[in-house]
Image 1 (cartoon, helix red, strand yellow):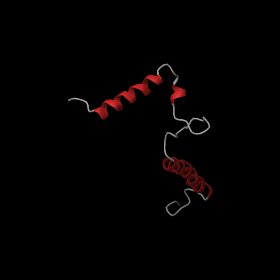
Image 2 (cartoon, rainbow, N blue to C red):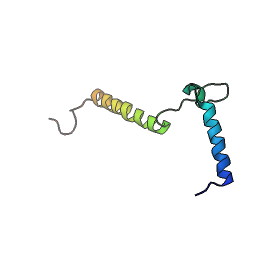
Image 3 (cartoon, rainbow, N blue to C red):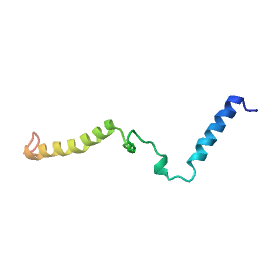
Image 4 (cartoon, helix red, strand yellow):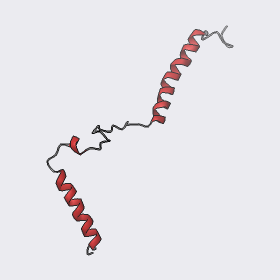
Amino acid sequence: MAQTPQQRRANAAFAKSEEAKRGKPISALSNKKKGGEKLDKAPISKGWMYLLIFVVCGGVVFELVRIVFGAGQGYFSG
């Protein structure tokens, strides 16, 4: 299948941009925000982070409440 002129131009532009990247370190090619600072993205979203914190810290809180208010002194213990 032959390339269309539009596809040929797009391929040439892509090849030119890739050629400009050659020999540069990865840090120079990464996404940057204004001011030249690198954008760092968290590996997980905030929602999952909050859920993880709730599960870990919530379990600790419930366990402390159980210890403080007397575990084993409930309905079924003698």
